[in-house]
Length: 312
Length: 306
Image (cartoon, rainbow over all chains, first blue to last red):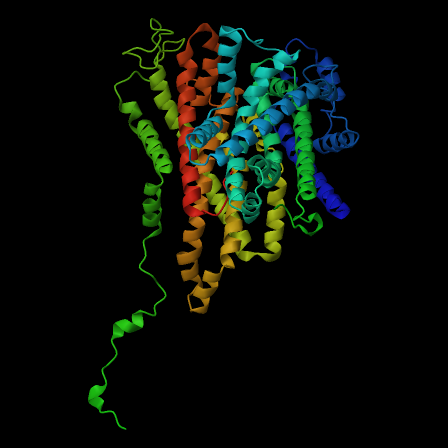
């Protein structure tokens, strides 16, 4: 186990280094400097000073080494667009918000997705099943920004049930979390249904039934456990899904999370912010995937992590 | 006891053919078509895709306004007999733009997928067929890329290369081939060691015959399934990028751009600006997903769908 985790950490470090390197050189291959547009009313000395402050006057190789060095100390550097703020500040401010939103959306999609999938499997090929699966396909097919707009239009504007936008109380979180959860919810529901249908035909379910166990006990204690297990493997991808989805959702709902900083960074071509957030997101995802794999190994006794080769 | 020669009958040559190693067979396409027809949902998906493709092909010849023609006296009109899907703030016909957008969105989806398929099959095919150390190194690299959130890379590329049609396709296929490569490699690897390939080999089939008769047809299903899921994901990604302002630039219209324009006016009651692009994105996604699910059931019934 320990050696497996160590191996994974090494491979994660290499991946992260690759990402940093590619991102760095991509960003610096863009012609021009971030201060070009200020050239008109800024004196040459000021521009030189700014270039020196951001180490932009050094050769590319030196800049790269400097960036790697500061990264090792978990310093993502200063923002170019918002001078005194550092990228670390932005993440420190934005991440807790995004994290709450993401966790809420994930919880909604896991709970509702598993419930929907289970009900569909128990009523296989009946009306409820077909309705649930049509709902799931629609959840996958409709982009989340459309869901978000519809929620704002009806729930917030026409019916005035919940606030239209921004962040604060729990009432602000409901709509964005719902909009963010539709995609993952649909994916989980479909997977749960497929697994559940298969598990319900297993011999041990037949045995449990023959013993005269209550149907609820069979479903919750015997079937669900095994049916839900593979859903854990999806969590890594779902976290990525929620993460990128939150760029758009945070923009629509004007939520001051990381996604908003990232999108603003893109629109302002604030390279240090784009790089910093990309590195942070990548690191976050890699750690999440590792956690998912470890958790899966812990809850599924059939998997022995140290014998596993690569990803399953 | 002697048997007179007259009792011997020369063996019929056809009896020898009974030992041949083929069954009466349908071509891969015939087989797939036959099974597709039985799967109603998948068939509906395929039909929808054909309709969309038809719309994209003949659309510009329909008697509607050109997609970029501005009629400033007809701005922000609700859907009517003259403008089926209404008009936008520059008096452009939304139906014409949807039809034109179908070309762009489908083109992006197909082009990105085509590049994915070519790179993925070559990369995955080599890794799976050669195996051993080459496979190990190649797949380690793919595993690493797999851990990278692909939309981040796409966004980075879009920022660096500047928005545009070609950029979107390059950016989407820069990460899209990974899934295809993994699938093809896994398929080739498992087919290579399957019993019927061994049987074919032991019955004296040539390597070329095995590739042609066994590996290609059997891998084809999985590849088709992967294709039917990667086209909509490319279309979806384009909508997503357009929403962030990194998509197609005006006056060109893709569904993603139209939807994100429509978002800003939804609160003033111009529902048609968002509704129709969103509808077409959703229907396209739905069609490809239905087809993909169906193909999944057709080609690998044992594999779980997720």
